[in-house]
Length: 104
Image 1 (cartoon, one colour):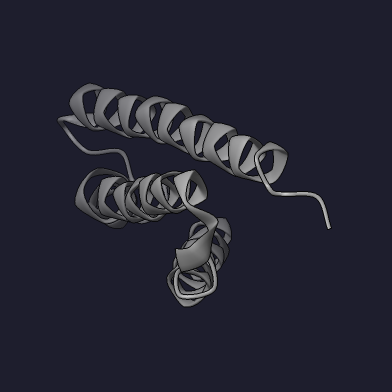
Image 2 (cartoon, one colour; image 1 turned 135 degrees about the vertical axis):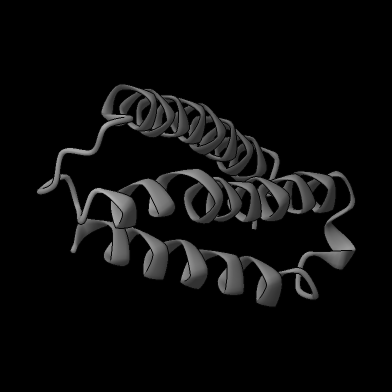
């Protein structure tokens, strides 16, 4: 349930960032931060669908214990750790873009 919600939120954030790209074209350095943010959000989705989601499916959301349980658990944990670091980098990009916005 939570994985699905996380994916929906990431997809909507990705779409929102893509839509904001045109509005930021005149903002100069902010466009680079927005491009990085877009790529980082896309990376979180890729990490989730390549490593986390298949592990959840293989273990039926951790209700079935398989013979290679330890390997799957490590893959699941590392995918979450890497995803957290990528998400933090995206947050840093957002904060930097907000701080660099010209005052109105």
